[in-house]
Image (cartoon, rainbow, N blue to C red; front, top):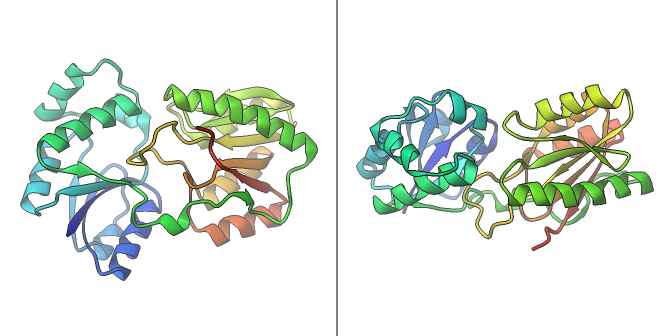
Length: 270
């Protein structure tokens, strides 16, 4: 079976393609010009490039390469989708038909169009199950009592927001929600939060969507996550076990341990 892979930004697409090559799988990469790294060309069985909004071209490639299963790997910033996209006629028609342009609305509608064309969206972590976070404390340092109280509060807030498809992350300090992630992304949210707390420590909580599938919008943490935490005085990170990808896990934990950051992974609540 030949898979297709829509490549966004970050290391996620490259790692998935490397895993596919090791497993002897033929994966055709379809890189988003505005987001994906050129490194995917050397890793894929075949590689195409399309612009955001080129839904018709995506379908054409799938038919040409006999792709019936397609995974979405890597981030495409929601702000770009919302404000910078130049849709072709297929996507323009679809956008007129949907009520909400959040992630669930946009990608869900695209998934239905693809399905009508004989292309099924499949689990985006299909090739990288070994990178999903396990339950428990992942770093040498455990959460302090104060951090635990902030994290418990933050998980309730983040879970509620994820359930209505607003954002995946919140910044907490002293059991108060300082900032909520929306279209700007986690890094920008943490920097904004740091300006508001005047040197008080922050805690970062990332939550997965309350849905059964993992077709898109899977939470990801990588070395850059730790770098931005150090920059903003964020001392602890909470993630959902089995539903969060840890990109370059060893490096993440090494940087976190060196900085005295605690990372805790919790089984998501249904």
